[in-house]
Image (cartoon, rainbow, N blue to C red; front, side):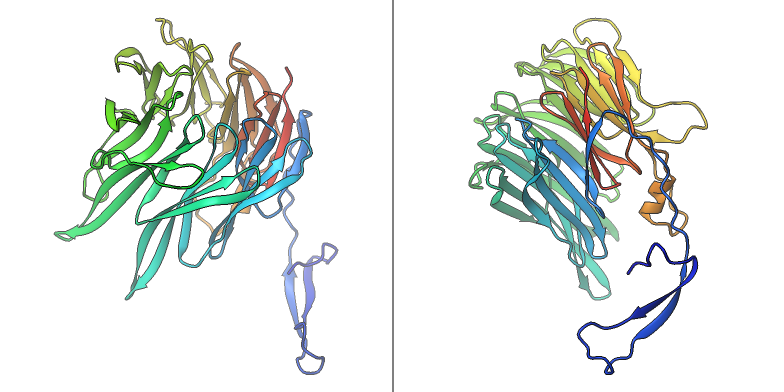
Length: 463
């Protein structure tokens, strides 16, 4: 129920009638409620590069993805409801701005929590894979028991219909990637067994890496069991012959105080491990697949020869704040671009002995509001990198709503960098609250951004 905008401040009268009941059977109920002025949103200047705005009132934009041909845009909407989280995956035509299809809707249920949704589009643009995890809670006596399930949906983007779905019981799914030919989907699964020993909770993890026929959902062979514990990510090599797996080994005690991370490289056909790079959590192949750059969260990077596993170069950034979010190769594999959650961007000529070139998006001056730059995207062929610079929501000490928290934040910014000159191309404003996602079109001419204000903003990129 809303009070009309023209209602006077201080007090308003609201008459409630039950529809469908005859007059005289139910007496109208009259209430007097206080009316307070609505706090106006701060004025945010809109940069002239903005070309269009799509508004989704009541939602936050959770993710944006272009199809490889740039003709369609995947928009993921999110809303927090009383019974949990609500997600919609919708496909829009980029030329007309019209919706093509509602692809998937994940509805909330009592005692069910949905988290870590992730979308992957096949290289040929024909298929969409959505994976997420959910916790279901069951009351046992006076307590609640939780069970984690991992879910996969694969959707035909051309016709907007679901091809198959999979729900694995008592496991989480944290990685999904299509093979270069789009025929195979690889996923990483983590199973957790909980026990109590000597009054202390114990958790034992075991991971598996599965391969699926992308169109039918038929499960192919998995990698040999017993090689993984917590599988965080899985990715194909450019030729599809290998996959790298981000794997973490943890001790049994909970909470775990010791863990070890490593990147494993496996031969898909032979189902044999080729290399193990200890101490690293993420990796990325060069465009021709001959090099593999592995990194730690705090900025230690090594370049390996993917054919024999030998180390080719190393760099230690030793980040004291935040962490490395992205690694990108230039088209000729001469440079490696590194970006942090603090808005720092490096261009490293890995084969030389020269230090990397660095630029920064965030001010480090004392007294400035704490900000981060975790929404990021890039188009290496167009020589573009983009950060979404957000204020951080303060720690909760009141009963404020998220909307009230967002209203207190400084206006977010979109910072666009030229990867060739390492110079700033543009600073764009227009969003309120926080920017959640960014995507640069395949042709490098358009940038889209989505935020907590429920808008998708379309920006023209000058060349």
